[in-house]
Image 1 (cartoon, rainbow, N blue to C red):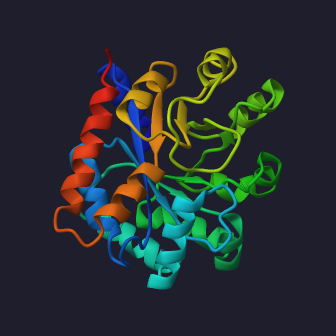
Image 2 (tube, rainbow, N blue to C red):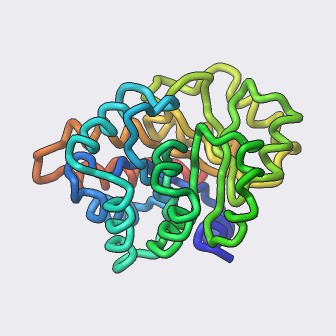
Length: 266
């Protein structure tokens, strides 16, 4: 059983829901990731998603686009991101999922990336522009690794395709809460709860819901209808707002603690 499966089992065992936090490698500073991840884990995060910055992040809204642009300007790249994950692993066993786009991985060399990511301590991948059909063409190489591949669905994904995605995903399904890009939103999107309830019998993997979750109240409502939530833009906004302040890590930690508390049930 890998770190991700262990964590789902542990959190379910204490009747809580998963809190996954997204940060961008290289933001706000080139060497920020290790300290951020350690703080997030200490504050209650169960999973960590580390974004690999890319100049054309088609699934991301302005907030994460800005963090990716800044990270690239800071000098972040795949090699450095993997080295920072090795540093994180010196103090932490929290599951780490890399989220990024296909082109940089193909340029790096997909097989080489799979090998290097696993050796660095990565547990899984999310690649929004990798279709399940394309994944099946590289699946033989991927199956030999320790990494899990996790695919996305949205409220307009047909049931038949959700079953297909469920069949090829490894650890969890990333359920996009809206038909749009990442970014903070106010309130739970119309129809999301009905959609989550309607697919409970369709999927066999846990459901983590992301895109737009920005406060504990929304996390609680969504968490009651899924296995957990993913919070990204709200964290990036807080990092941006607190950038340069000595209490940046403390502010982030307090926000994560409130999110996690909201996922501990009513």
